[in-house]
Length: 318
Image 1 (tube, one colour):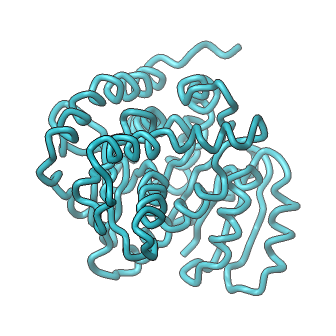
Image 2 (image 1 turned 180 degrees about the vertical axis):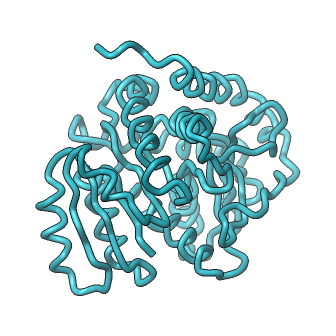
C-alpha cells in the first residue's frame, strides 16, 4: 500500500513516519510537510525495511505526494502549549486541515483519511464538509484518530492491575478532548481495583492525560511519542482491513448515528476492505457513564458545528 504522512517533519510526524517505515504492509511511504521533509525522508530512507520513502516539500509538491495513496494520515498543524485549549488551536489547524483535504479530494479521492490534527472534534467535520463539497465524500473512510485515549486507558489500567497492557481492553467513546472523552471503565478488563471515587479519578486522568503531558513538557510541546504509537496502531488496523483481514475492530471518531443527535461520535467500528462496515452500538452504560454521556453532548455538538461552519463560511484571509 502507498501511505502518506502529512506533517511528517513535526513532533508527531517524525516518530510516526519511523513506525510506518517499519510496517511490512507499506510499499511506498510519502512524507509531506512545509519544512524539513527532504532531511527526514533522507534519514528514514537509510532504515533497512521494505517501504520506499520519498519526501515532498511545500504545497506545489502536495499533489504528487498524494497521488495513488491508499491511506493518508494527517498529524499536521501546531501543537498545544501550556495554557492553550484545543480550541485555541482551532484557528490555526482548521485552515491547515481544510487545505490538505481539498488536495486529497483532487489527488487521491478514494483514500482512507486518518486525522490527528487537533481539535479532532472539529477537524473531522471540516474534512467531511470539504469532501462533501468536492463530491468525493465517503463516510466509511474518514476517521478521527482517538486511539490515544484507548492506549492511555490501557496503560493506566495495566499499571493499576499489574497486567500486560496487551491483555487490557477498555472502551473509550465520545470525542477527543476533555469531558468529551468518556472511558467506560465498568467494561474494562481486567477491572481496576478501585472504589467509585477512584474510578472517577481514573476517568478524569484519562480525560486530562494530554494536559498532563503538555505540563510535564513545560512549554516544549505536547504528546508526540504516545500519539505516534497510537496513530501507528490505528494505521496498522486500517491496512489489515484493506488487505482483507476479517474482524478488525477499532475505536474511531466518525460520522455515524450511534448516538442520537450527535452526527459525529467516537465508538467501536468494524473495518473492512472499503472502510467502516459496521458501527457497533454502545454497550449498556452504568449510571455514572450515562451521566457522562449526557454531560459531553453540548460541548461535542458545539465543536462539530464549529467545524461545519468553518467550511461553510471560512474566515477572510488575513
